[in-house]
Image 1 (cartoon, rainbow, N blue to C red):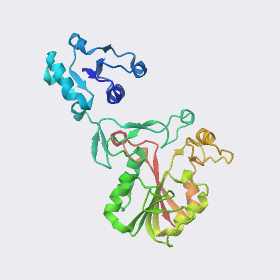
Image 2 (spheres, rainbow, N blue to C red; image 1 turned 180 degrees about the horizontal axis):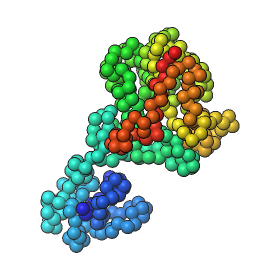
Image 3 (tube, rainbow, N blue to C red; image 1 turned 90 degrees about the vertical axis):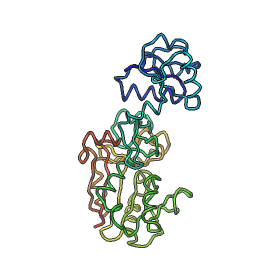
Length: 330
């Protein structure tokens, strides 16, 4: 298939990038526009660039009009030039039947995941599940790959959505998951964050204001790597859990080494160098199960590639090395 991409704004360049990475069998014959962003066009040097007046010289299957606000105007211009209307498609029309991915949270079909994360040097030297620059953002609800995997685990390997949990505490809540839990449980669900305005209540995980054995579930994803006093945090979580209560936990993990902490890493630059993020204080490793069990939990490690097929991992935009730990209070 050959296509002409008409429009080199942000939508146009994202579309070109997506086509080249996701559907490389499609040939981009020409990219046309009256304004070329030369700094961006250098990334796609192998693609022929032509002006709108030269479209008739090319053979193509479709012209994809990417500027959303000028679709009708551009279409009229193309029709005046003798272009077959059946070959003119908006970006949305062209993508509609080519959506290979699926967000399990908002239940939307996705043409391509958005890029998320940072591209620091540490990610070139170490494989850290749940970190680094990657395709992982839902273009509809904004959920990240790690949130979709956590949601899958919660839905299929716990009774938090199928049953009637007696109290749920959710730290640094992912809004896409939080909204579902709040709708189901009402006041039985409490979201918390150390920063005001981000959740139902302000709470410090190392000194919680909640009663002993108040919650059946505590959810704590990608937060513990920010907490200096890990021991106090786990003790507070255990204190607030009911007997046999479950702590749902995830974090960036480097499976090729043990958990790494460097007390001399106090600057943002140092933390990026050692942990991959300026506000992290440790990088969890392959000893994570033993580490959590020492705090009084029975840990069930749910490793993505062990419980999901390659097809499912790709379809749902999961990370194959990602893990969620279901930690039951013992």
